[in-house]
Image (tube, rainbow, N blue to C red):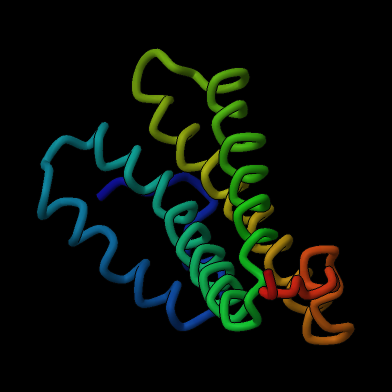
Length: 146
């Protein structure tokens, strides 16, 4: 069975990556018998694991920020990471012709999710340490009296 080169998932010492590496060949060859497609899947598989990790962390931080009623920063960080980083990376540096687009899409998505993860966790740390200190939160309450 072909491998993804010298950099295999099993080079990580986490149990999840070991289990994923153990079943990756069986999963890929269950869906295709083409070795070229399988090699591409093996190359993309570590990026998929990293994207799942970053997505789980940023989603958890985003849910906690929502509980703090701090949703504007999450919206802005989503715009920055996806529309400011991920999509331009694919359009500018991506190989948009051929099968290289698959790897480039997953790589740019992983980078965008990593940036989003860093922004969400940093904002969560700031909010939990200093409170929700924004202009919207500190504006004076408006009277409903007419």
